[in-house]
Amino acid sequence: MESNLNRNSRIDNFLNRIPVLGDVLKRPLGVLGFTIVLGFALVVIFAPLIAPHSSDALDIPHKLEGPSSTYLLGTDHLGRDILSRLIYGSRIALGTAISAVGIALSLGLFLGLISGYLGGYIDNIILVILDSIQAFPAVILALAVLALLGPSLLNVILVIGLTWTPGYARVIRAQVLSIKENMYIEAERSLGASRKRVILIHILPNILAPLVILLAMDMPVVITFEAGLSFLGLGVPPPTPSWGAILSEGFRFIRNSPWPITWAGLTLMLTTLGFTLFGETLRDVLDPRFSGLWRA
Amino acid sequence: MTVVVLMVVIIILALLVHIVPGDPARVFLGQRATPDLIARFRSSMDLDQPAYIQIARFLWRTLHGDLGVDLWTGRSLTDTIGDVLPHTIILAWTSLLLAVVVGIPLGVFSASHPDSWADRATAILSISFITIPNYVGGLIMLLVFAVQLKVLPAMGVGESGDPIDYIRHLVMPSVALAIPWVGYLARLVRTSLLEVFNADYIRSARAAGLKENLILYKYALKNALIPTMAVLGVGIGNLMGGAVFVEVIFNRPGMGTLIFNAIQMRNYPLVRAGVLIVALLFILANLLTDIVYTYLDPRIQMERK
Image (cartoon, rainbow over all chains, first blue to last red; front, side):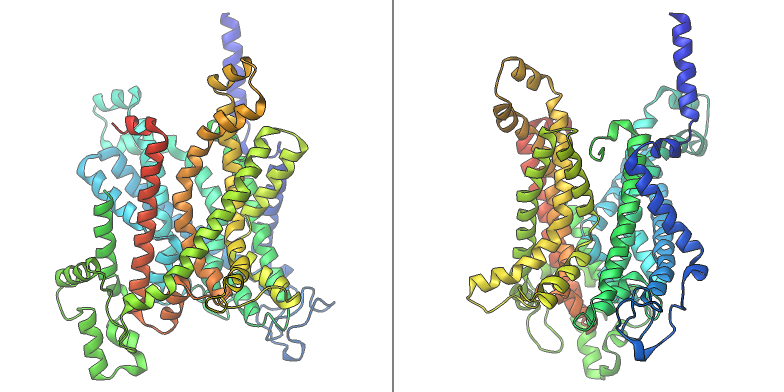
């Protein structure tokens, strides 16, 4: 009995040391997701090396052409190489998504920790603010704010960050509420630990797993959200090659050439698929209680 | 709580204009900024009053259904919005209906054949659906069915008083909006159904020898659909937001195109009124879902005390 328990705990320890990524890669859909995400990351890093042309080199005589040996995916209405624009656009997509989610995460951590740990009327005030932000459909709120601030890369990042903050704050608050009831927190407090110490040393590490899941799942949503805003002309202003702008220009010339829309659409779908599969598998691995919805 | 949120939303919208860099009147009127127009713009939004008056007047007028008057056309904004709002509501509800009618049976089918090849195929199909943003789906459908095949109309809502034409114009926008939700609902229903299948009362029903179909439709599905109900409220708001994209793509009158065009024309009072209405509808939808949800699942009331 005794040795059995010991062995079990040793196995548990061993399992805990296996990197999460290894578990993700044990599942076929996880492999697919990881491959797409990795490919996307490589494109982002090596964009200047991979792109066959500059993202804004004009070639008006060859505008709106289909795929050819010079322009592998064809050209847009100004004769710019679609492939190169998509490759450089990946930088905008990932850069915006990471910065925006970073802002949402920092603000959400701040509000969620305070709200969950302190409780009382501060908690209530924060909840009302979060509820009010969530009372707007995200797109509509972003449109209203961008209409006032004007479209720019920074504004888009700020607006998406703000729109996503309530989601993070709520998850963090809920986690804090459940962790704070544990005996070890009470023990630590009765030993005279400061609030700051309890929050930073004991609560924060325990909410990391759900946060990683949330981050992974939000990446594709934020990427499509940014592309959508750019499609409406409220994202990153031209001539920056963002995926949404490529779609929007393709839309204007939809009767002249199907290529810009087709390629930009496929790129967005493939990226979303990769991140979604990766995020879902990560969730299955990190939080087995949560699984099911995505287990395929 | 809903009332408090409603108030805060109105306060946010009343004061949001101040985040504009510079004098709002000059920024929005731009070239058109004659002293007379600036004065009218300021007084219509109470910009010459202190903040609390701006809030109070905006609140007062909103409660009386008065959203203000268009500075340029002199038309009441309530009328302008009233004209296009039905189109967006029809679009959003049609999409939701499509998502429910296709997504829920897919999920039920998937859950009643767990781990079969059909289940896997459905899983891949639903995940692929989820990854198609509505504007990408809309653009690709526009390209295929309107530009290339020319089988469906590309623009507008059709002739007034011709229901068949209206429906033909509704097909592509509503399908584009519904696609991700079909995938999402299919996954959600599958999960909750599989969870319910593990419950004791289903095991008892099986032990008692009830037919699988009876168990599924009479006992399991009822409970499995409760979580689905909860997301539908969020769904309708999400669809009304997403309507911006498909309305712009298919050049359909509606709240989305109204707000979008108002932004292009820098008609901020109209933007604000449009956003307010969409937010109010969203809050209302969430409130209704909460009520229906507690009615369907009395356990929730008990948990909330």
